[in-house]
Every structure is written in structure tokens, then in C-alpha cells.
Length: 238
Length: 177
Image (cartoon, rainbow over all chains, first blue to last red; front, top):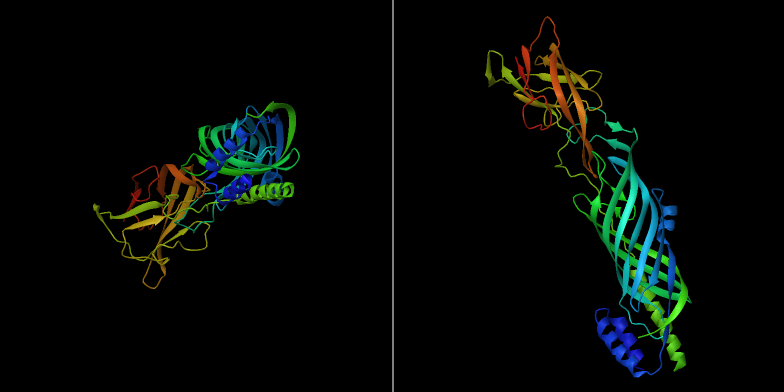
């Protein structure tokens, strides 16, 4: 009955989450049965990127992810991906492509019912991308005259050997839909810490980082994934 | 009690799925080039009195046409192609070529051509990246101007003041007539 109350309470407000969490702990301490939790490796594949790749001709992207449970609440986590994205606007046509890796940890903030393995987590990553950019077409910008024909340059210029590194904060949830199969969603806030810029140009898109903003090192992103949990061993729940 | 537990577990899962849905968002800022962004500079020409080069002199009934173009260059605020009572003009240079050739034409009050002088502008172009919305612009280096010789010129001489065309608010060329 108490769990009933807890759950409805939880559903009403996320802010009061921690209060409910503490109450739940008290409840568990009164139980004398030791419950064992599964530890293991969870591997997943991003769902959004392949779908977007089909719908949007300017994008081809793929990402796999994994986490490994280190302790009750801590997971080693990472993503590996490949990205091709085309920026096609009035004055520029640029295609960026490359791969990236993100490594870090997730901290689970959600106290589950016994036997359930859902997760609300906060994570941090260091991410690194290696990529190239093709400047396929551009227009010499001239707002004050239209006497001469627009000067369109369509000689392809490739800028290769570009790199970027950033710190990424993630927040997300993972829900066990059926046994050992999880569906997950997360949002990303990131800030570049190092970057090689092409000579006389800029990085418009960085694989894994997504689009950049002029005069800012911040970026955003999100993802949906489906994951499989591979149980490796059991450990007493503390 | 067991039945209720199952119902609540289901509710629990749906609740998570609901948050999952809320997490879906996309945000795309429009990439529009602001009007006030410094653009490819035009050539700034001042007209001076040849008998006293310290004094600005107004041109009358001037029209300008580039080589291989059909139209006359719009010079006035309303796109007028013949202007008078001005001693300073801005004209564009070709960004796709290292030379722009212009005919500077003096007309009579009825719009008939009186005298045509040809000016040749030579330069190197340098592409400068502005930002993702505006793309690239061009600046000009090693700028030079040549007045083509003919028997009947209305322009007496031309002086290049700046050999780098970067800022169109300063005078680059002086025409004395």
C-alpha cells in the first residue's frame, strides 16, 4: 500500500523524487530478505539516426552504445558512431563526415522497486571526433549589389584531418520493456574543449557533436536507443 | 494484492514511456545572414576638380556600364542609372575575375551620350569566410586603375589612394576632371 502512494506521488512530481526515494529506502531496510541484483553489460543501438538517415537525404548516421554496471548506481558508459551530414543553405553547401567515440560514466538516480530495473540517470562523457569537411559550393556574399551575376563557386574543396573534443552532459531514462530489452532516451548538452579548424573556414558540423553555433562552443543533441542487457553475475543489493 | 501489483507495474512502465516521449524535441535555429554583416566591399570613388584637386567636384549626367553587361549600373538611391550633383560613388567589382572594365559615360540633358571614357581596374581577390549564414566574401588586393587613352577624354587623371579594397566607407580612387 505504501508503494502505491509512493508511485502516485512520483508520477505527480519529478521534483519531489528524492523525498520518495528516501522513504523507499526505509521501507527496504525493514525487509530481512537479501535481494540479489544482476550485473552485466548492456549494449544498444541508436534508433533515431537510422530513421533520420532514411527520411533526410542530408544525413547518414549510425551509433552504438554500451554500459557496464560498476556498482549499485554507477555505470561505465560510452557511445561509438559514424556521421555524415550536409549543410545546404543559401550561401553554403558543406558535407561533414567522420566518426566519434564518447567515454564516461552514468550515475543512476532512480531507486527501483525490487525486481525492476528502470533507470533515470545523469551522465558525463569526454568525446572525440575525427572528421573531414567538403566545401562543395558557396556564393560570394554581396548584399549591396546585384549588377553582376551571383558569383557561385562550385569547385570542391576538402578539409581533412579535422578533430574536435568536447565534454558532454547527458540526462536520460532507460525502461525495461521486456526481460533484458530496454528502450532508452537521453538528451545531451555539450561544450567543445579542443578543435582543429580548417584554414580559412570553420567547422559547421562535427560528427557526434552535431551542428555548431557561430561564436559559441556549446551544442545539443538527443537520442533514442534499444538495448540488450547481458547478465554476467549477481550481487547482493545493498 | 498481487493483481494490483501487476497493474501498478504496468502503470510504472507507461509512466516511464511517457517521460520518454517528452524527451523528444528538436531545435533548429534559422541561419539567416543579418543585413548589417560586412559584405564584399564596393569601390569608393571621389570626383575632384582637376584644376584644384583639393576641391570636390560634382559630376553631371554620369552613367556607368561594365564591359559585356547589357544594363547600366544603378547609381542613385532609386536605381537611377544617370546621376548628377554627386561627387562620390560606390561601384561593384567583379569577384569572379581579376579585372573589371567600366565605361564612364557623360550624357547631355536629353540622355544622349556625349563622351565615353574607359577605366580598367585590376586586382587580386581574396576570399574571406564570414560565418555559416553569410558564407564567404571577397576582399581585393594589389588594386590598380588604368585610364584608357583616347583623343577626347572628359577625365583628366585617376589616382589610386588605397591598393587594398576592404572597407567601402573610405575613398579608394580619385577621379580628376
